Image 1 (tube, rainbow, N blue to C red):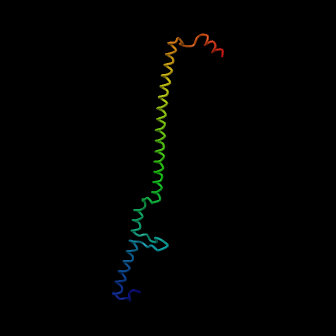
Image 2: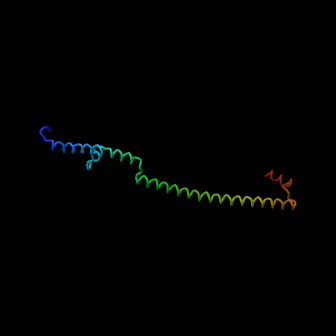
Image 3: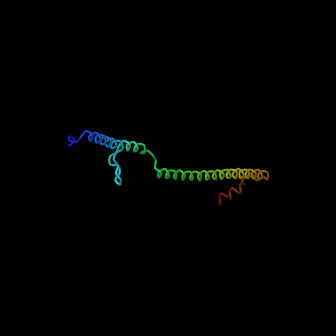
Length: 127
């Protein structure tokens, strides 16, 4: 079929066929509404480069989770600070109560009320 064509036509056709084949191998074939039909070198490189990229949606979701965790941490730190304040206040109240007990015990000893009398112990045992 191509034997009847002159060299002036064969050479440009061969060049065009070579260019078409080169473009097909390098770029691939992508049709509208269908997508990539024949993947080319560029498609493989783009796919490899973007395969590990995070999409905008994933990034936004991760940022929202991070913000939520930061809010939880702030709430937990505030609760911990309040608990430490309550513990310190409780310790001060305990020390004050022990000091008051010691003070009352010392006062009772000076007044001659050192403990339970024998009659009080017998009454307590009966009731």
